[in-house]
Image 1 (cartoon, rainbow, N blue to C red):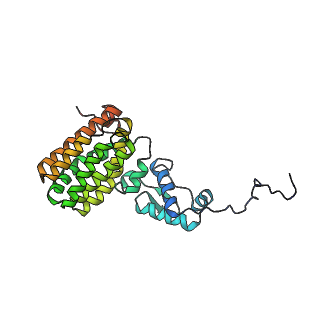
Image 2 (tube, helix red, strand yellow):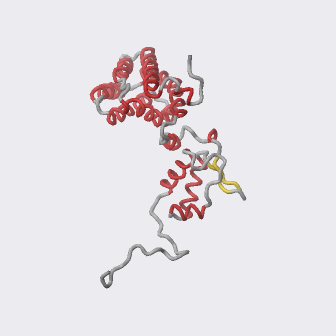
Image 3 (cartoon, rainbow, N blue to C red):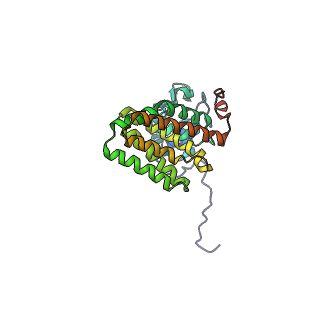
Length: 259
């Protein structure tokens, strides 16, 4: 080694402070949230102590405390005196929180999430289309129609198709002019994206024609036809999921397989 050379792999002395990383509390919320949702921190378990998380994640105590506070507000954690911070049962998690849904969707394939979103879409989207047919401004009708046509043009590009598909459904919810529906729609979008990635990315079911039928019904200001068109799309989407995952996928998600 030449004179003056500096060794970069010299270990820190025991007890020496480790350099902290410039992670934000938002990043730490995501890291811990994913660990909870994906089961690394199981329901009922006590998450590592504050000082242990500081040492592992190389951030300050304030960042950890804020992350724990945010996760508690989402129903994932509860701080208990003399026991520490505990992971709450999943039925207390705020499942419509887009971040919680996003963390769930990072699992290999979350069949229960897929089923739950399919159920929710069947309950909400046909009625949303009916409202859109009546309430949409002319500019919103034009946007929905343009997105439906664009979906047809990009069918061969799965990634682009999925993005346009998300814009289409976002535009539908907006055109219904219901603030509560917009909140639910933001949550549905996460699960819808998972559903489309299961089907479109594997070469099944772009369903561009069905989307165009919805757009045409809304343009015709026919609430009945818009509702029916969306119902047909949802039935077709279920068929596409079955073609990838098999007919028993709903049973595997925790519900009886339909006869």
